[in-house]
Length: 541
Image: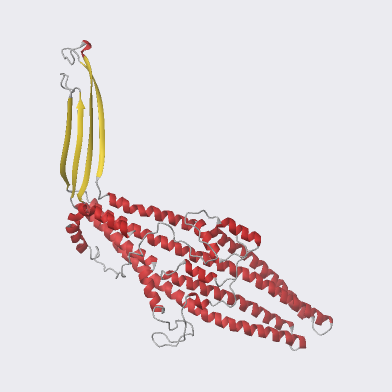
């Protein structure tokens, strides 16, 4: 909701609702402070700032490095063609380019954008209920009269006459007191803010989905390359075993073992290629065009800098020993407790739940207003003209102006129990909204905890896998040397090779999962922006 627009509209209706604002509105705020069903309301976080609630007239623009130019918000996704051209040129696709394409072609975000635009109109619909309503009613009647027997309707021949009556009425209705209309106006404002939260969620969700799909496809791409390297190394080992067998220095078992390992590596490569097709398909579904080879993550990438948090070894809050990199002691504002507090107060799902509680309470107050009287100021202006009247047979021309002003009060008396049923229904919905809000806070806290430990635990896993990779590489070289001098058999070399390939695959997966957990952690804390994608994209080459 634009604050300027809200202030202007508030001034517009101030004179219309001053009675309500000073009267029953104050009473309503006191009466509804407690849950309609007596349930305690969960503590609400500090209200979000007006700048957070400002509705986006256009989706946020991608902030790109100097080498790239942001696409205008209203432009067609011409980058689709450029990406297809890049595929034909053999260029590697990167995360920023694919996200930019997805922002213009993803059906989920497109639907969210239109839903956002539609929800903004709820504010104006609510405001209209407090503003004057005017209607015009024009009318015209032509009479054909014919006298029968002794009744004379006209002095002329045929005892017949024709005359016209014309009129119009303009009615202006101004609500003076209508608590239901006032609550409907508030609901329109709340619905607009709720639309903001949902659109922000859709934007963050797109970043996560694109990043997840990118690294899933990159994992499959890496696996294809790993199994190709594995095949090459096994082929070399098969040749060495065959040469030793031909020289009488090895048995046929060594040759057969190497051949079996090569056949298995072939099947693994085929499965990895099939998985790559599927994972690229998910990415293509998001960006709307074919996707070629992806830029890999550089081996020396400092993924710890994704959150830009220095890490140290420490103990947790109860002084229990913990892993080196899980729940480390971080500067103020970056501990697990800080992240959870941020998520519980700023997470878009939590804010949406908070707004939903306010919306449900407003709906409850509006249902209570069904039992309250309403008062309207009604003014009419009309004009009647005729050259005759049906019951007077004397020709006469009349021209009459009618102007009236009145106060009209409507007092509900009996509704057959309908109003009471609606009030009870909305009271239950208030408690349901509070329960959903509480669940959103708990879910945000748990998701933040999971992403936080996943990120810092992932950093520890990456270090462990890097050490394991170095050890596995050394073990493979030692096994090859032992096979050459005859102290080891071929199966020992193949086992060492398989261990190295598996370790490298797990290392790559750990690095990608760590980055994804960083993205999710920021999303849960409502801190994820496209700048985070730019930081990650800088780690790709």
